[in-house]
Image 1: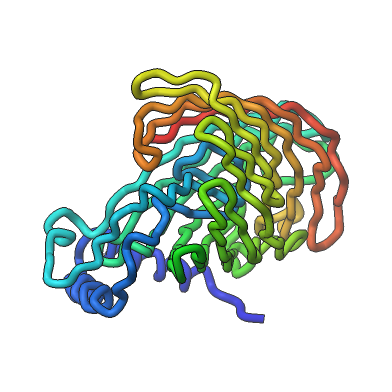
Image 2: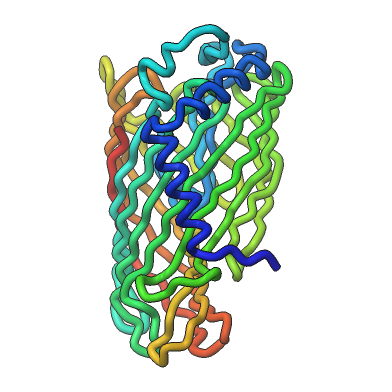
Length: 349
């Protein structure tokens, strides 16, 4: 088994930070040369379609989620600028921010039926020289209230960068390949178990403006649930209703009202949550814990802006979390907490 040292991961993140801070003109020139070799039919790409791993069901802008979809519009395809000999992408910056999402979640519980307070931030970017390439850094912190029967850390964190390539194959077929390197641990553990590299390979078939099929698989890098199939249907019968029958993140949304540049939507959704973290037990022994759960949620979101790619969104939701599990690699302290009420709110801009 390949084991990556934390020092190696840190060096990679430093290199990425250097690229983002415009310190390497050579990399930019290489991107420019590569873009000349990747000319595609620009009218066939969807407006913005990005599926991301890792644990949330949110509005349809850039935000954390096991899968994240943004609206597809075959009649309003985004114009992708892959033309050579232009340097405006250098003048304006290497990257174009798509959106940023701030989220707060509270699972109401205490004692062995422990509660969780979760804060997360994510921000999606396009690479100007390679418009089919996008990346989304994200950071999440969990504060645990309990449990008493086992020595879970009081605080856990997760940091990763989702790097995705979306490739049109024809008028109806599209392919997405992505890798998501990251780390997940408590603040007392530094070892190779904290390194988690997720990935996905997905194909989309646009039958017509109403039906879109998805096929593929997602590697979650979780000890309790390493791989999931990604098969399902996205049905949009009208501009007011959307049904996403995709395991493990089904969602139904319906527009309640609309103004000149704003609208209000109601939705109900399911969600697979949890994750795997490297931790240090109270005895000082290093271990790995996997937290599993399912959520059933309903919520309201307020959207501002007519362009789905540039909407500001305020959302709040309530639901129930169930089938909760705490599983250690050592199997010492495994148990199943009871269900609990979950509250969540956030903003995308």
